[in-house]
Image (cartoon, rainbow, N blue to C red; front, side, top):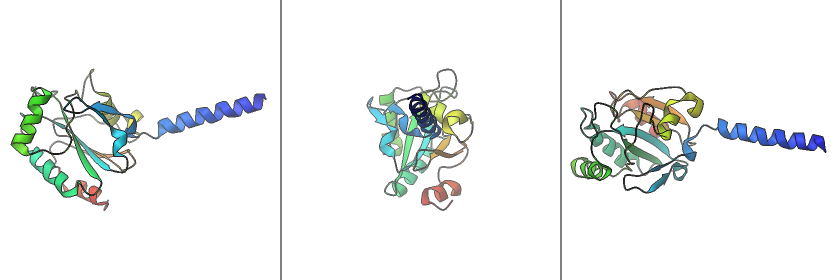
Length: 182
């Protein structure tokens, strides 16, 4: 009887450890720009690019490149998720409503935009803790260096890579990853 209990305890512990070791994004939920819950588990099987955005940044024109990339590959199990953030020189001061209006009117953004969050510091959102901490993502530690840093998530929800804000969203490495040529 005791051996059965030990085996059961060991099996439960192992499944918990293995479940944690999956290091995927699917357990995260956030609010979209309209205040509705967005569950990353709804994206299983898709490649995901996560980008922290800002409306008053020198990189803001990347919205145009992001939208083109999204339009080109959205039917190929690829999605872009934008997270407005005001962490860098207060370059995203607007409300969610103002940000949504700006993205639509100025750049015709149709990819999902989430509610404004913090992407660094003591108030860093849990989704960005996952993206930047190896203990959570199983890939490597990183820091968000500026607006428009790009994180690439594989179809299994694991972090594949990230690109600095200074790299265009349509850089060859990203295109190769989307097309499965990496």
